[in-house]
Image 1 (cartoon, rainbow, N blue to C red):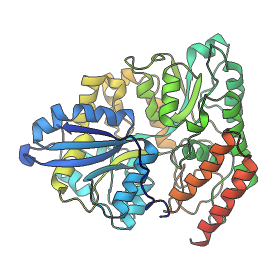
Image 2: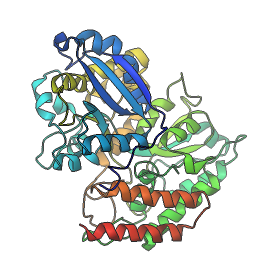
Image 3: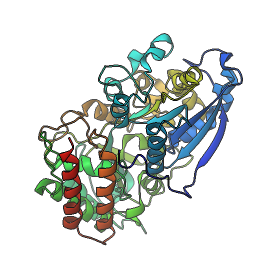
Length: 448
C-alpha cells in the first residue's frame, strides 16, 4: 500500500485520553484485574462519548484500563494503517471500516471476532444489521470487525430556513434540485451559506461524498475489467457539479472542511444544508451542543441516474494479530458494540447520541424511537437500501460504494482528492485535476 508506510506527519494534535472502563453485555467479570489495553480511534462524537464513559463503567466492572488515542479521520487512517501493516503492535484495538476489513484480513493482520461474539450470549450477534455484518466479514464469511456504529448518507437541511424561503424539500431530491435550493437559501441569514460539502482531501473525506455523487451521475473509478474512468464524461460531469456547487454556495474554507467542520457549520446554523453521513444526525439533535436541534429535516441521498445513492460505512472495532491482550481487548469490544452500551449512552448522555445504525433492536427502543423520530427511519432505510455490489449504472470490479476495495485506493483516492480540493480552492481546473487522476488510476489498473 503506497501510503501505508509514509512517515506519520509530525505535529499532528493527538488527544490522548486515559480512561478506565465498564461491563455491559459482554463485559464479563473482573477477571482482567489490573490489565490495560491501548485503543486507537477516530475523533468523531461517538468516540469522544465512549472515552468519557469508559472509566466509570467498563473499567469499574472489569478492572481493565483503556488508554485511548483519538485522532482526526485522515491522521487516524495513516496511523492505524502504519501500525497494523508494519506489525508494530502498539495498539490492541483500533477503529477501522468496511474498506480495510476485507483487505487487511486477506493479509492476515486481523483477529477473527465472530467466535468471541458467539461465546457471549448477551452480545446477540444475530441482532446486527446484515449490511454491517457483510461489510465487516472476510472472504471466509467470518466477522473481523465489530460495528460500533453504522451509517449511510443523506441530506440534512434547516427546516426553518426552508420555510422562510418558501422551499419544500422533496423526500428523495435530485442533485439538480439540491443545487437550485442551495442557490435560493444562500445568504438566507447573515453569514449563512447554502450547503456544506466536504472539500478536505482524503479518500474517506472529500472522496466519500464525491464518489457517491459520481456513482449516481453514471460514473465509476474503474470498469469491471479494470479500465480507468476518472476522466470519463460522467466522472467529469459529477466532479464539475460538486466543485461548482461548493464554490458557489458552499461553506467558507471549503478546501479545509471535512466531516467535523461541516458538522460544526450545520450545528451552529452557518449552512442551510449538508450532505453527509447519517451518523451526524445524533449530534445535530443534541440540545447541549447544537443550535439547530429540533429544526433539522432529513431527506434521502440525492440522485441523478440511480434509485439510491447513499453510501455504506461502519466504524468498527478491530483487533490486530499483534496484540498480546486478546482477552481484555475482546471484552472491551463486545461491551462497546453491545446493547447495554447503547442504553448507557442513552441514559447518561441522551438518546439522540446512541451509536446507532448497527442493531435492529436499537430502532425498537421507545426512548430512541422518540429521540430519532426525525431521522431514524430514513437512516435505517438508507442503510438497508445501500448496495456495495451494484452502486452505480455499470458492473464494478470490486465491492464498495464510496471506495474501491483494493489496497491501492487509499493512496489513489487521497491523491485524486488533493487535485479536486485544489480545484475547489481555484488553484486548478477540474479538467486538469481529473487528467492527472486518470494517469494515477491507469497505473493502478495495470497492476490488477
